[in-house]
Length: 257
Ligand SMILES: Nc1ncnc2c1ncn2[C@@H]1O[C@H](COP(=O)(O)OP(=O)(O)OP(=O)(O)O)[C@@H](O)[C@H]1O
Ligand SMILES: [Mg+2]
Image 1 (cartoon, protein in one colour):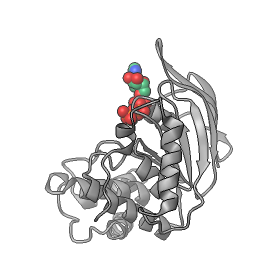
Image 2 (cartoon, rainbow, N blue to C red):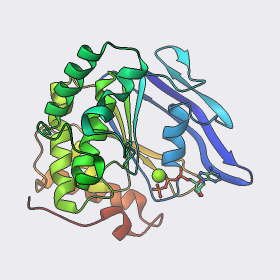
Image 3 (cartoon, rainbow, N blue to C red):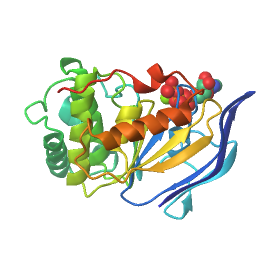
């Protein structure tokens, strides 16, 4: 469904991403894991069509990506809600842009607000919500547009580890309820990647290059404490040994909810 071919990006003299190739199947949950500054956000922004590659190409459903489009939804690293709009108005935003009638917009937005568990908060402003609630609304806003692919850039990085664990589980529930949309989820947390992904692309230190593509054939729902997840985490950390400090990639360990 999505093919990334020999993709590179230079910012003047700085090489951010170097000759990256991979593909994503329809309905796959792909995690992209790599140290800070290795070009993960740059990669997502190129797939979103927000910036142009220096070399290589991105093909989505057989078409070369040249500009942004409603087929790609983006959940940003920082919360990107409109502060002056209520929860309901934030989720309706893309539907308004697409010209849906008000009644249809309201119905759709309410359904997605319910999907992320925030019924009752429709009239709140973002400043009245917690970090986790804001990120849920950001997810609802993207899903309400029914994109072909959801690009998520460390959406839970700003959350404390317990909220992060809850959000990971809720995202998987929403993903199931949504007939498993294709997701590209960027993180620099190994635990998050092994818990969420069907497949993990491990990137090197800057400039980001593919270290290895690792399929995660573990049944869902996954147990964070299982020996299989633990082994996989160890294998990925070994792969990255020498690239970055283990502390950065492990983040906070949080096993209770
Ligand atoms: N607009 C820009 N102009 C110049 N350099 C940039 C620009 N955007 C990113 N860079 C540089 O490119 C490199 C990759 O940045 P990018 O934001 O893609 O990394 P990242 O993997 O998302 O990091 P993090 O995990 O910290 O979010 C960094 O060295 C950064 O300084
Ligand atoms: Mg980033």
